[in-house]
Every structure is written in C-alpha cells, then in structure tokens.
Image (cartoon, rainbow, N blue to C red; front, side):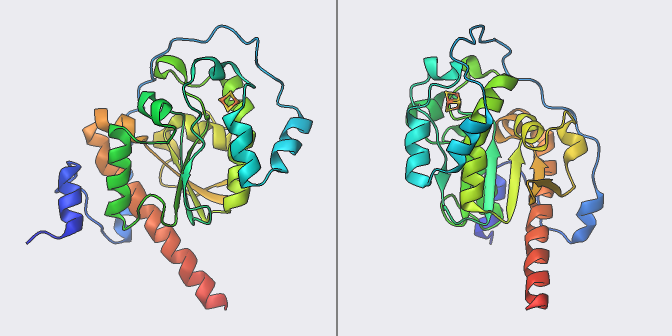
Length: 253
Ligand code: SF4
C-alpha cells in the first residue's frame, strides 16, 4: 500500500524518480538546461521609481511586522504599483526555520494577495509535503518583488532593487535557518550573481550570513518535467543540511 508521501510524489509526476536517498545524491549533479526567460514585455516608464537610498532602506529596516505590512500595502516606489491589484507581502510562520523566496506574483497571486496560489503554488505545496513541511508551519513564503510584473515578465533590475529592502527586512524579522531561492531571478538578486540555476544548485550559499540553497521555480518545473528530479534532489540536499545543522547544534550544547 502506498503511503501519503508516495501518493504526493505520484501526483507531482515525480515517481519513480523522486525518492529520498542517502548522501550519494549530492554527487549526482548533472548540468541543467537553463530555465527559459519569462515573457519579456517591458515597463517603459520609470517615473515613479524612487531611489533606493540608504535613508529609505534604514527607514524600512526599522519597521516591525505591522508597520512593514502597511508600508508594502501602500507602496508606490516603483512602476509595478501602477498595474497591480493587490500587493503580495508573503505568508507563513513568522518564526519559520525555512524561507522560500520566489521572484514575483503572477496573475492568481495578484488577484488574491498571497504568494504561490496557482498551479505553481500547488506544486510548491506538494514539494513541501514531500519533505514533511507545509505552508504556515515552520515555513514562510515570500517573493523578491511584492507587485506583479505585467505579463509575467521578469522584474526589471531597478524594480527588484527598489523592492529588495522589504524582503531584507522580512528576513531580518524571521531569521530563518535556511533560505531556498526558487528560480534564477530570486537567486540572482539574493546572491548578486548572474550565474545559471544549474551552476548554483547543490551548494550552500550565503545571504547576509544566512545559508541559502538554489533550486528551480515551481512554474518552470510545470513546463520542464525532466528537471523535477533535480528539484527533488535539491530539496533532499536542503533536508540533509537542516538535519546536519541540528546535529552540530546538539553536539555543541
Ligand atoms: Fe513597492 Fe515593491 Fe510594489 Fe515596487 S514592487 S511598488 S517597490 S512594493
């Protein structure tokens, strides 16, 4: 009889490939095909782009959760505010050990004001369930930018730069033990790197002193079944990292 995890993996189309294995899978890193860029339509007006000055960052970094949510809800500091329906602040356990960061809201998220609620969200929830996690319980989910880029294009560098202090403050308030960057845009901005997802996978990076692991964005995985096995391998890598962290903490007590 199949257990719950097997049923979840089967639903995700990940069986028989997705199986928790020992540390051997860490060495099974094959070069991955770079995810295709999202729709490339561009915002041409920068008229509402405010400089991400030190003063602005310092002001944002002084906010508590309530103030930060209010600040984001009323933000007009970059052109993305013009076409949004709702800001998408983030959701989950504000004391979470796990923080998942995507690039920005899509149409469903823009309508509902919550990250990862469409098909990609369903896949993310299944990925979490496969490693015994769930949204809201020791998990926080956020995006790099809080307003939907029109047409699902990637955020412009200036838009990402302008919105980054909000995520920075969220991370400071949560203090997660591990950040999972979902997709190239999130990884590139958090790590200030232009490297491919394929080359960033399988390593523990650092974002302001917090460990960070890179994997594919669930929306990309919906289009690229072959890379689901790699994403599963990344999640197993993350689970092992968290277990090792716990063991080393226990050993030093
Ligand atoms: Fe403000 Fe970020 Fe929305 Fe731009 S994307 S308007 S910086 S909340």
